[in-house]
Length: 377
Image 1: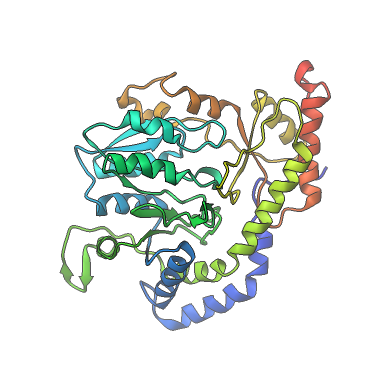
Image 2: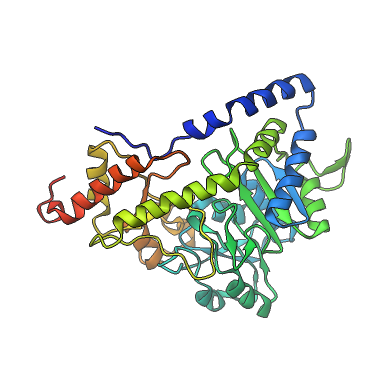
């Protein structure tokens, strides 16, 4: 049996072994472990990559979203429009500011927040829209910005899953007033631990986040505001700088893998493949298909040594943490349906054509050869 993992970093990290080992040695000998040269160099490089003037490294993606919102003065009494089908961390970061989440349903073809539905969710208390570039496909920020501009709202991108994607030629992470990203190890650009960043063209916002991440201090022993401890680790900054130099090639590998899936699975009855909107870029952090037979297909693949995952099985509004909002089952039917029929297939740098054929062959076997009708497999 040919086993196919859902994710493997082995090939990617083996390619970088010598570079990262050399960096470890220089880091160990440097004696500079917090907010040193490695972080500064990465911030400059990631700002250039993102097409922004500033990047501020922080401890993780959650803090990046929180600090971006906090820098805009968003807190108690405010509302922030969020996708109904994102990972719950996006909602939690809004809640941490004291603001209220206002969920809006996605376009079911792209999984991204539907710009046409945003306007009806705006109230006098709405301060910002927080689109998430889900699974690696950029949101239609132009359409979102039109609504935001009409109502004087901030746009804050959650770019945790789409580093390197573009919306009509402009990179994600540069399209909002201030934007957040995560470098969790499984991301398109992943650290060897938790890490995140905020990007912006606004010097005042960048300075505010820079102060906030370091206990509210710009100068040692002088604290300007009540801040937090959310500094990007020096060792992670250096590793991310190394990985960033290779990111373009890795994205092309992901796109090639997505094309392999499309070649093999296009036309398979009962399966919907990812849809990319015109003018929008996709970097395939995840390759997510949809089928009414999702659970049984997942079991079938597992029986044949193929790992898959569900992103995400329980929408945020149905999580116990948010039961106080009172939405309940049926509150956001598109998000709920996507949670029931979506399946993420193996996608990682280094996956082979043979491995993809193994996955697609088992999918076709299940959907086209009688297992659906008989319940076998």
